[in-house]
Amino acid sequence: MTFKEIQELIKLINRSNLTEFKLKDKEFELTIKTNKQDKTKTVVQQIPSVAAASPVMPMPAVQQPVAPAAPAPAPAASKAAPAAPAAEKVEDESKYLAIKSPIVGTFYRSSSPEKGPYVKVGDKVEVNQVVCIVEAMKLFNEIESEISGTIVKVMVEDAQPVEYDQVLFLVDPS
Amino acid sequence: MNINNTLFIGKVVHNYNELPSTNVYAQDLLSKSLPIEGTVITTFNQTAGRGQIGSKWISEADKNISLSIILYPHFLVPKEQFILHTVSSLAVSDLLTKYLEDAVKVKWPNDIYIKDRKTSGILTQNSISTTKINYSIIGIGLNVNQTDFPSTIPNPTSLKLAAKRDFNLETLVSELCLCVEHRYLQLKSGQQNSLKNNYLERLYKLEEPAWYQRADGSKFYGTIKGVDSMGRLIIELNGHLEYFQIKEISFLD
Image (cartoon, rainbow over all chains, first blue to last red; front, side, top):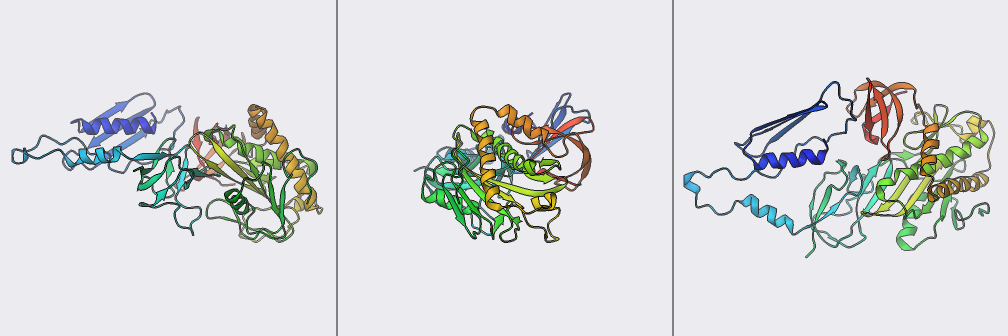
């Protein structure tokens, strides 16, 4: 199972009313528990079975809260409440464009520890401007933006692993 | 300095008595102009060479070679870039093999070893967008005539220590350019498979059981079986294969 597939699965489960989900086959076992009371925590454990014959992909820990679950049936007192804020937030982000990683590697915001980041939230970026470095097996890649706009969010922490096509920055093109 | 033995590498050479870093100079050149493919920047006294982010390459003045080559491998997509390591590490080991009887090996991903000691490090810097490698700077540091090394460097050696004689640095630069050109033309003519096979033939500790350490500090005994297309190191342990990226593993002996 790929990291992406697991992410998809978490999203699906979060949108559902499930509190626990188990998947097991020859190669591995996956358990996802959701805490529907406070709706912020998702605990994921992937346990490779001892006899696993397939390559074990390095798996970044899934710690960040994923998209909030759909609102539970509202108690009577608040039934007049308007659309959930969570939904509004998702809509907001949809107008942004993403700068994605063209390769698997390690994400760096600056060219060396002594230097400041290439870009920060609020900075304007132009087409062909370098926005970060992704290092893969000692190949250092300056990533050029293919879009212009304003950086609204940095999606990955410095020195963290990134997957192919993972969103690195959100950019407001307007 | 003139490099006459090649077709396109080293037709333009920027040669300095001293430079902080040939790779940084190459980047600077690329930001201000469009240097022709094969442009070489070289010095025998690099004062601020770099290894991986945060680590430094220490070199004594006028004894070693620092060289950067600018290439435009537009025919590669970013995902295929590990083949550039194959080209550069084979080129450096081709050059050393010419002068040495000792085994010259490529320690994954791209350090060049004479027996169990490092004699060369390669740092490649690319500029990429979603579908294309815009340019590639291949930076090569080669220990040539240096015989004393600070004790902080774990296991260094030089061409002189191995061959027991001095070398002319300019001659070696010219030969190194020819070696890189030969391997790069092999890549351009579609011979990726023979490059990969040659890389494996020279891979340090291939099929030799040895101790390794994971990023979390745990140690294990395993055997290198090869490298996948992304450049990850494949190690067999306890009957199954694991794939490692650079920060996930270190060699223990």
